[in-house]
Image (cartoon, rainbow over all chains, first blue to last red; front, side, top):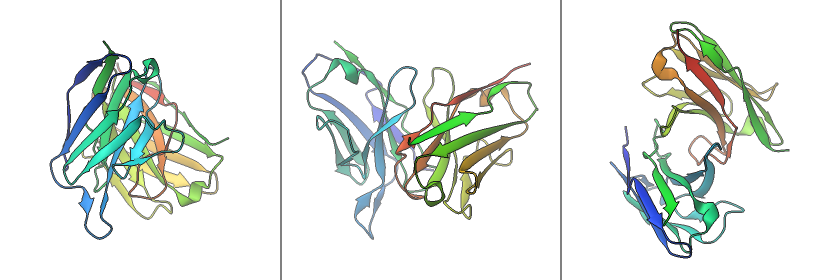
Length: 113
Length: 119
C-alpha cells in the first residue's frame, strides 16, 4: 500500500498570508505512460463532506478559487493557498489514486493566527 | 441537481449487518467509478471500496475485505454497501463519492450517513 504523509499536522496562518501544506507518498504516483501524477487534494470544513480542490497534482477543480494551487511530482507534493481567507479554515487531505487502496494522508488542520 | 444521497445508517450491535445505499442524480451514473469512504468520529478519511462503472472491477481496503460488499445498480442509479460482521471500529460516517473514471479524483461526495456499532 502507498502511505501518504502530510506535514505539518496543523498550521496557523494570518489572514492574507500564504499557507503551504506538504504531502509525501511512500512510492511514486507518477504514471510514466501519461506523465500524470495521480494525486488529489481535498478540503473538509466542519460538519461537511470533503470537497475536491486539485487533481492530477496541479489541476484546479472547476469553481475553486485560483488562490489554491498544487505542485510537485513523483513523491513530493505541495498545496499552496496564496492569500488565506477566513473561509479557508478547514482540514486538508491529500490522496493518491495511482493504485488501490486509494490512500489519504492524515490531514492538516489549517487555522487563522 | 447533481448530488449523491446516502441512507441506511443507524445503530447496530456488533456482529450484525447493515446495508447502506447511495442514490445518484444529475449525472450519468453508469459512466462513473463509485467509492465508499468513511470517517471515524474526530478522525481522518479512510477509503473503503471502489466499483468500476460497470461493476466489473471491485477492490476493498484490507480492514473490510471479506465483511463488506460494494455493488451498484445502474438501472436505479444507486450504489450499495453491504456491511456484515460489524465491529465497534466500523463506527464512522460513511460517504459515497464518484470519480469520472476508476483512477481519478473524487469530484462529488454525498453528505454521509452515520453508522454506530455498539451493544
